[in-house]
Image (cartoon, rainbow, N blue to C red; front, side, top):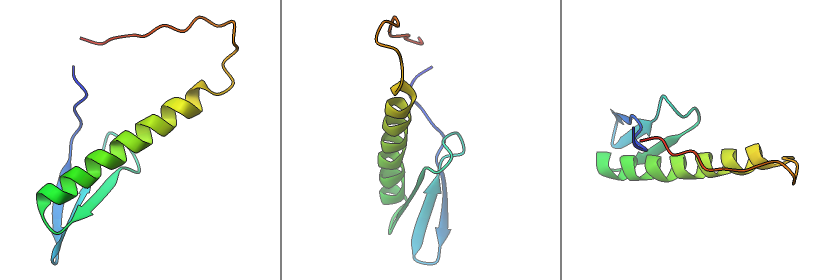
Length: 71
C-alpha cells in the first residue's frame, strides 16, 4: 500500500472538478483535468497534515510515540 488515493474528475462547463472519496473535504478544480488533479493533491496534503497535527494535540508527553510503516 502506498500513499495513493482515488481522484474523481468531472468536467463542469469550462472547468474540471476533482474530489477524493477517501478524504472527505478534499476537492480541487482547474481549467484542465491535470490542473484539477494537482489542486486535489495539494488539498489532500493539507487535510492530512492538519488531521495529523490535530490528532497529536493533547497526547501526554510521557506517551510512547513510534512510526508505523505500511508496506
